[in-house]
Image 1 (cartoon, rainbow, N blue to C red):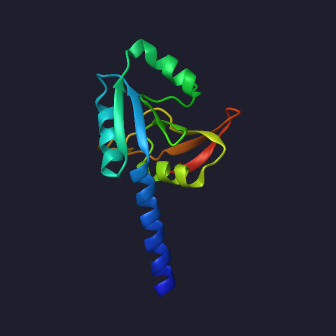
Image 2 (spheres, rainbow, N blue to C red; image 1 turned 90 degrees about the vertical axis):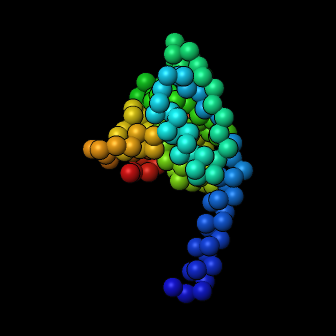
Length: 145
């Protein structure tokens, strides 16, 4: 590894950490959902300041609709961070990348509740995609895990 490569790697790591430390995450979730707590812990462990608001189950659809989340992109909790929506069990690394790259989009979604995603750890992890939700509602794969 050259000195330049080492320097660039260290710089990127520091920038990524500073993006996480400066980003606060507001999560809207059902009080009875344990996996949401797992995702919140994952985000905190990765340097994000997280606040959570419990929402009545029948009101979660209203929160999601206001955020631009559709049935195809929905999961169990909805978060706001850095001017974006983060729906479901999206890894912190993808959220950091979203904030750093600043695409013209609503945000990210890990539709459903993929086993093996942050907060959904356990046996039988399955591959899943994190989708970038464009402002016109189209989606594209942002990351695969």
